[in-house]
Structures are given as structure tokens and as C-alpha cells.
Length: 211
Image 1 (cartoon, rainbow, N blue to C red):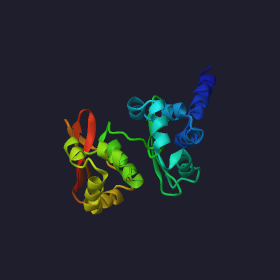
Image 2 (cartoon, one colour; image 1 turned 45 degrees about the horizontal axis):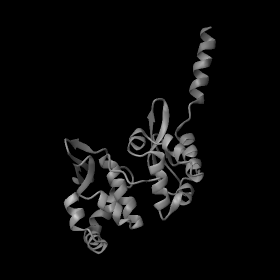
Image 3 (tube, rainbow, N blue to C red; image 1 turned 90 degrees about the vertical axis):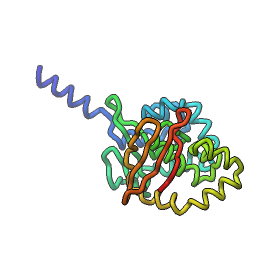
Image 4 (cartoon, rainbow, N blue to C red; image 1 turned 180 degrees about the vertical axis):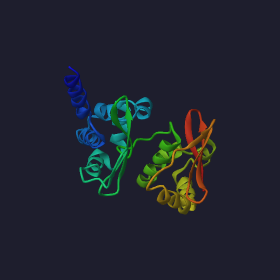
């Protein structure tokens, strides 16, 4: 009986999808535009912040579209696979284990999120690449967003600070350290004492400065 029980436990363990299995299921869901499945395969923070309909709406607005995301997530021998899978093209997908299953937390289909400092930073990078100035404003402090209400003013501001932004993006490309949160203030520290600072306003994390 003990041997049979052991075999059952082993079979159950072998049946649990690993990170690469979850990533492939996620890629197929994006390809099929099955946003309910994308939602189910996302981490708890994403599921809480966004429902399937919100993900579908953001997908419809993304100029690259789900097909480009699905191609970017295409199978390939990962260079590294623990909780983070680094694909052949250099794309990093972070998976977290929740309730005995792997979920895609970052690096998959990106939608505008500001519920954590890390999500706000990823949203900024995603929005800058696509020139989604409306989304960039979502991660700015309210006073700055109001001051830079026109696209021309915001673009001029971004160009003025772009060297700092690009330096931070390059330094954080390999890995983004977890944010240190103290009340409504947070910092992601990287490199030689450089950091990105955040402030929480109305439940959203906003990027205050990139050093």
C-alpha cells in the first residue's frame, strides 16, 4: 500500500506543469486570443488588477498586437530556466508558483498596470517603446501628468530625460530587483547606488524619478 501511495504521489508530481509548459500554454492562449485563459495563466496580482475583458481591450489597442507577442513567446531552448525563462531572442519571462501551479507574472503579454512598483516600471518601458503617451501619463505623478497634458510637452520631457531612462533600462535588462516599499514610497535600487523611486497615489504606483 505504501508503494502504491508513493507511486500516486510521484504521478501527481509528474503531472504538474512546469514553467516551460505554462509558458507554452500562455503563448497558445495569446495566439488564440483566449483572454480568459491568458487571465487564468497570469499571476495573482495581474488577475486581481485586470479581468479578461480588460486584457482583451488592451490587446485591441496594442499596435503590435497579440500575434507579435505570440511570435516573441515562440518555443526555443531557454538559456536559463528557474522561475525566470530567458528565451533565445533575449526575452525574459518571469513565472511564479502559486497554489501549486506556475503562472506568468512578467514578460508575457504586457498591459498597463500600476498596482506594484515593478509593474509600473514595466508599463513605462512598454509604453515608451510603442509611443503610448496616454499610458506613460498613467505612471507619472498626477501633478506631472497634468503639467505634461499635451503629447508635445510629454515627448519633449521624455527626450530630455531619455539618457537616464535608457541607462536604467539597460542596467535592469538582466534582472529587476524587487522594490523596497516603505508606506507609500518605494525604490528599486540597482547598479552603483542608482535607483528608480516611486510614490503611491490613489492606489497607483507612479514613477517619481529615475536616477
